[in-house]
Length: 382
Ligand SMILES: *Cc1c(COP(=O)(O)O)cnc(C)c1O
Image 1 (cartoon, protein in one colour):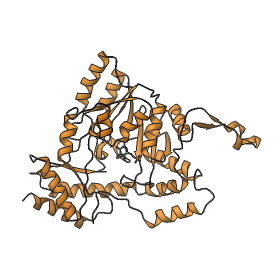
Image 2 (image 1 turned 90 degrees about the horizontal axis):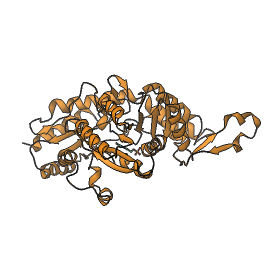
Image 3 (image 1 turned 30 degrees about the vertical axis):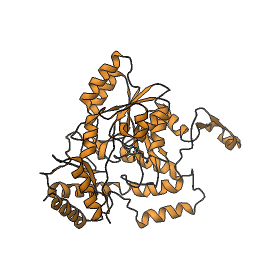
Image 4 (image 1 turned 135 degrees about the vertical axis):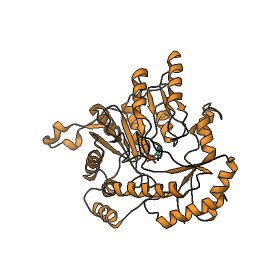
C-alpha cells in the first residue's frame, strides 16, 4: 500500500522521545524553548512559538494582529479549512481569493481588483492569509506592495512550507510577516500534532506566546522572592494551545532531518516530472522567485471531464496507491455555503478541484515505487 504522504520516524526520534518520557518534564519543560530556538536558527526567525497545531498558531497569530469581531479576513479559496476558521474564531468575517492555475497560489491580479473594489466600499481586510501551496511560495514582494497600498497584515499559512524559501530567504524570516508551519504527520516534519508561528516583532511574539497558555504572562522580577510559582498575570483571553516536551523532543530530532526530507521529496518530484505522461497531465511548474519543497506533487488532467479524474483515483486505489485532492475549495464546504458562498464564486479554485490529484510523495517512497506509480498512470491513459 502506498499512501499520498506519511511520517518518517527513525530510531533516533524514538530514543529522544523515550528520553524525555523518562525525564522530569513531559509537558512544558526544557524541550519547548530548545525546539523554538532550533526552529529560529534553522529559518533565521527572531522569534518562534511552538503550538499544539498550526490551527492554534493561526488563531493566536490572528489575535496578535488584532483581528476583532466584524473585521474582514481574506484567504485562499484553495486551502485547508483552518486558514479560514482561525478568522471565524475571532468573530471576523471571511472572504476568499481565487487562485491562479499555474502554482495554485492566490491570484494577485484578481486580488488587486478585489482590494480596489473593497476600498470603495470601505470593506478592506485587516488580514490576508496567503497559502504556501505544496511548499512553493506565492509572489511575496507583490503581496507586500499591495499590503502597503491597502493597509492589511500578512499572515502566511506555510503549513506545507517548512524549509521553503522565497528569493533565497527562508519563510519565517520576513520582517513584516507572521509565518505558520504545521507538524502534522503528513507535513514536512512531524511532532504528531503540532505547529509553530514565527515573527521578528517582539510584541506579536509576546502575545502569541501568552495566548498559547491562557493569556498568562509570568512576572520574571518575582523569580527570586520564592513565591514565583504563585505570581502570574492573565492579560489576554488565551487557550491551552501548548505543545508538550514529548512532542518537542520529536520535533528537535525531526528538524535535523529536514534537509534530507526536502532532498528526497525533490528527487521524487524530478522522477515524476521526467516520466509522467505530459500529454494528458499538467505537471507542476516552478517559479524563479520560489522553488517548491514538494510537500505535495499535484497534477491536473488536461482536457478530460471530472469523471476521468475520479476514475484515475479509483483505478490507482484498486492498485493500492492512495492519492488525495488538495483541496475542495473552502467556499464549497457546507458550513461556508450556509454563510452565503455559492458555486461559481471562485472559478479557478473550482476548476482546479475538478482536475487535480495529489500523487504520493514522502521521504519513505522508493524510486521503484515511484516508477510503478508512473507506469500505472501512463497506462491508464493508453
Ligand atoms: C495542515 C494544514 C493546516 C492545519 O494544520 P494543523 O497542524 O493540522 O492544525 C492549516 N493550513 C494548511 C494549508 C494545512 O495544510
